[in-house]
Image (tube, rainbow over the protein chains, first blue to last red):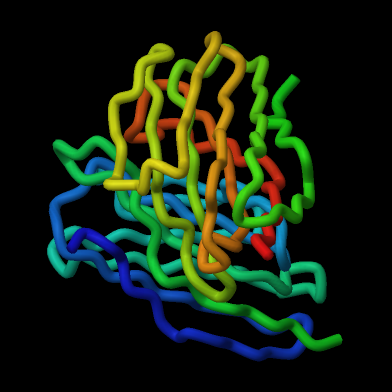
Length: 111
Length: 115
């Protein structure tokens, strides 16, 4: 299965701390994407990293990609209560025809 | 307009009913998707439309029938559903094809309850 696996399944931190989530996958990919989902709502695209990139930044987000280990991490710095949500990685296989989502990490930021 | 609009937001239907979910986008995206999401699970792909043609059906039961009347509109027709079909149904679209080279834009979903 191409599906990514994420860890931890759940993460609880204090406001102002950094949050790190990891994603592993099984096949060669074209790109890897991270999405946020607030409770019961649609997913919001956060950031995309291509297979030939190793690191990408967007505001308080930092994504790394290690294609040799087939893994990615999402770092949220200086977390806020509003960052409380589920975070999913999604992979597009190199010659694939769809985007497949990992199991997700539930992040809770306590104020 | 940078949104995907889904209607209705909530739907309760009986097992003998026929209903439809609607999805609309005006971003010029030529790939559109239906996903199903159960509580505390990731979204699961159901259908992919590319240039208004069905390109992927992930072995979805025939009680779910997708339709793409034009490049901006995607429908999901529901008939004779089962209680286990209760879920959040998400529509998405993408520029640049199914690999989502610029990311997918999701609607806020339809919360479906089958009674």
